[in-house]
Length: 68
Image (tube, rainbow, N blue to C red; front, side, top):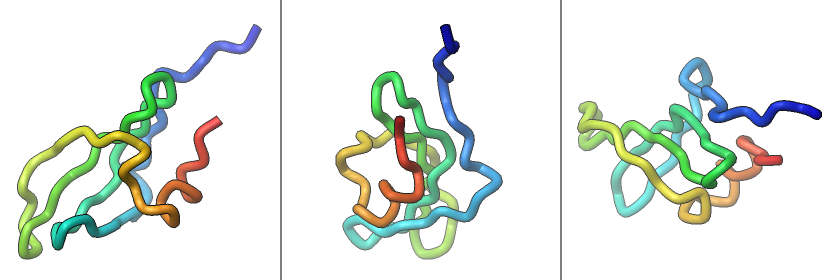
């Protein structure tokens, strides 16, 4: 039986998106609970990390991550 991954790292990829006039970068995807760790940027400056639900991501970003 295949072992499930706990997380998929996207830190080496440049996956950015915008929500509510703030820019985010995808850092890590957790397929078991369908959440994404993102780094938030406000006016080009790093403003910390947060965890978002996969459902809240734009469709273009969802297609890049492709959960299975």
